[in-house]
Image (tube, rainbow, N blue to C red):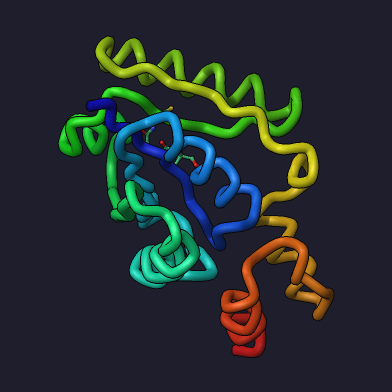
Length: 159
Ligand code: PNS
């Protein structure tokens, strides 16, 4: 039984994240999506909102759960009995940060390894920050996020 954690900010979840979740759920027995609740940042969506949105976005996949976490990722992984961290790699610009993070996590906790998925080509450009920037100026975000999330994002910018 191999349990994996797919951690991130998911502010908001995009089609790129969903693609990684679908693909990793076919490889691992169980995937826990770990939503970082970073008290030092002010996200667009609260951790509770992000968890709810993600649950709806992945409701078609059986072996995936969602939970918020604070503190160190490796501690969350251990608490969940997970030995694998899943991350997506878009471009070479992601590589340096991801390499450093995976090596740090492995040094802190040698039983935990990171597995990278290369992002599908159609989502290689996509990030949560891009979604927020386009939405902030009233642009079309229908190619970036599932339809039920679109109104929620625009509403945040109306406030
Ligand atoms: O979606 P993101 O913002 O790229 O995800 C980053 C995340 C949540 C994976 C990373 O910031 C994280 O693991 N934070 C928890 C704190 C931690 O464990 N830091 C040590 C690893 S360098």
